[in-house]
Length: 428
Image (cartoon, rainbow, N blue to C red):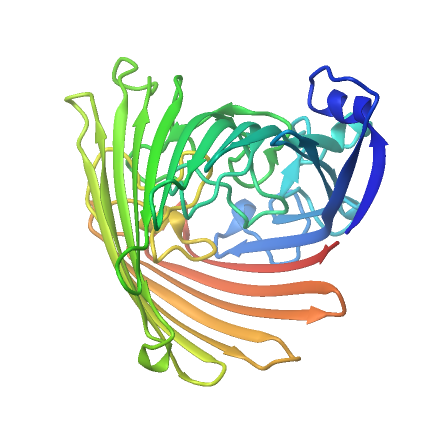
């Protein structure tokens, strides 16, 4: 991290505001460089077959290289500036190794790849002004939203770069042991594989049945209030309420979401025991749509040095709307792994088991799996097993993942899928 002294005029242009240029401001620069590779193979036959590491038209192998630069500044008098610019490239891998991108800029062509000029490589993911008044911080502009405080409109970190939101966020800590968060959320650039990161669109709710795509746009905004309290010993309680305006279904009526999470953990508990309880519901205003309720429990422990074990269970009923992030593709459920969201978002019961061993200098190995019972008429039960290896090589964080997924019933001749992923990140 280093500081660069620039004129106040440059900082003012970045913040889209007019300020006097007779003073200076320190810009603090941080960022990351990323290489991301992902390949998928299904057991479909014929023209729909896919091979791991293949780059034929029918294959699903994607990659990106990226550079992210954060420019943050103290503008004095309690004002701060945050900005983030991103460069996304294919690194030329589409020539012989991949046939698509994990993320793009300015849309995609039929192969998921566009790099015609510099405008197809660069986008602005953050630009906000924050003001601190006593114990309240107001943040206005394009920004990330954390899952811990906004479980149904949050920035997802599974892809090359996180998605961000056009939002207004207020955080207050006047009440002892309590954080109050209010938000007005309008648009996001989060959507999934190959997403156009330069395009900010309406948020959406995903409708039943599970398809893993689409959803109903929220033509209005999302209003959120979260209360997080740690007054009880060893316990943190987080409760959120959302009002979703003008969902483009059932005559543009809205919906509300109520969700709570209780985390219990303390160093005094034996073997690092920790517990979690979550639950809530989505309530559409339209009488033709059913409420969706869900709950989950989890337990973690460290029975021996460097070994961590976990078990979780979640259940979602058969409502009209999936339990899913309105600004992305994942769920807030304890049984969410890397790629099981389509199976666990509605009308199911899911168990998760996990084990992680930290070898020290040689990295960490994580093995985890879920078993999902599909309670819908489709009865398409699901099993997902993931093996992850994380290691730091020099200053670079490396992640290698292998996933195998299986369904009890075929859809489009597919009932099994394998995914391999390799990610390298250098933070500076």
